[in-house]
Image (cartoon, rainbow, N blue to C red; front, top):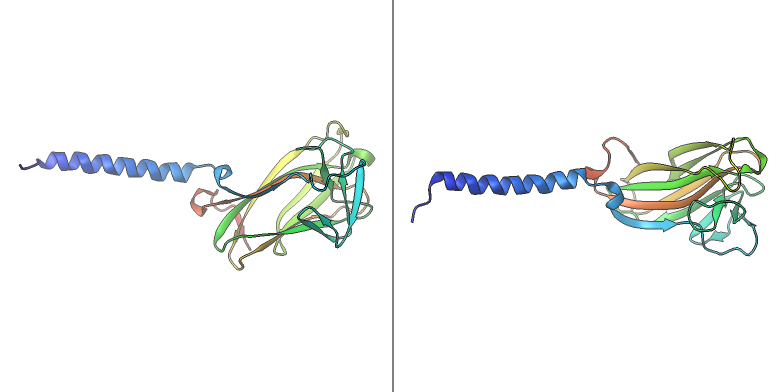
Length: 204
């Protein structure tokens, strides 16, 4: 039995509409729904006092202190859980960890940022690097903030790995005293290039 041309056009049109809907859904999907690489709120190890200092070469969970000293603390409000990381122990410090990243894949990194309020007001500054390349520079004004009201803000950046199968992510203080930036709730997620914000990813 013959089928009229109009019927073919209707079927093809419906199929194209479904395909277009799938593509638009992918293009508008939130990167936050992408695959999680890791999350870390600096809850490991659990410290017994209010503050424990770690020096270069020591481990804080899966992070390594790479320079200076940092402090794991329960002395003030955390963004997540009970502990946070002061990037200045008694000197400016940095922590790093290696991510199992894939070539030509874009990653979304978010973290909570505040500053040590015990010697304020001050501007606490630092930077984040991926494989040695700066991917985010930050500052936080501790004016008006207290240990019970840290005023955390969340920062987000993106990078695309184009050269290696692993990425060393490092958070470092650039504040030259014992009262520096505080970080917490670090999250890394991978996302397809087509659903990451265009033009925002740093190639490393």
